[in-house]
Image (cartoon, rainbow, N blue to C red; front, side, top):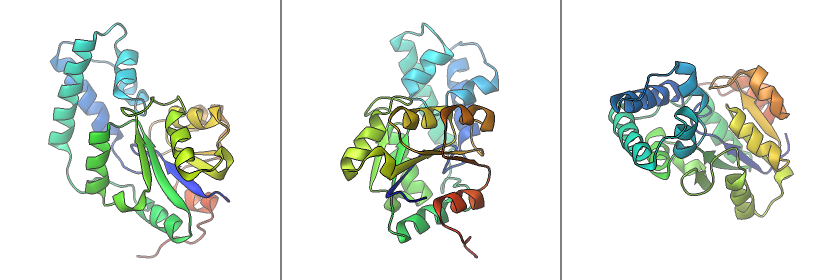
Length: 221
C-alpha cells in the first residue's frame, strides 16, 4: 500500500485495553447509581470521546453527573493500569518498520490527552509518532476533524494517508473525507460492522496487516 502517512487508533488497535476500558466505565457509572449495562454496550462506545460515549450510554445525563463519572473512570483506569501497557504482539514492530521504510506514523484516538500521554510513555511507542490527536482537544470520532488536522500537519491529501482502526468510528471518519482505511478485527468491532465503511482491507492478524502495508517479512525475535 503506497501511502506516506499511517494513522493509528490507539485502544483496541495498538494496545489491548478494550476490556479494561469497559470495566472502568462500568465501575465508575455503577458506583454513582447508574444501572449496569450489558458489557457489549460499554465496548461499543470505545473510540468515541468520553462526552459522546456517556451521552450514548446514558441519554439525558447532566454535565455534573458526566463529570463525576469521568473522574471515577480516570481514577479506576489509572489505578489498574500497569506498565508497560499491553501492546498487541507484533504491533510495535509494525510501527517501527513503517518508520524504517520512510513512512510517517501518527495517532488519532478517542482517549483524553492525559490518557494518551501516559500511554505513549508506558507503552514505549511514543517516539514513533510525529503528531497525535485526542478527542478532548478536537471533535470526537466519527467527525473527521482530527484526521483533517493531521493532514494539514503533513500538508498531504487524504489519499496519501491511511487510517487503521478497530471500530466503525475509525473507519467512518476516514470514509467521510475519502481517506483509505484498514479495519483490524482484534479490537471492538468485527468484519460485519467494519465492512459497512468501505475499508481498503479488513485484517484479522498482524501478519495480514503487514502484508497490506507492504511490510512483507515478519520480524524474527
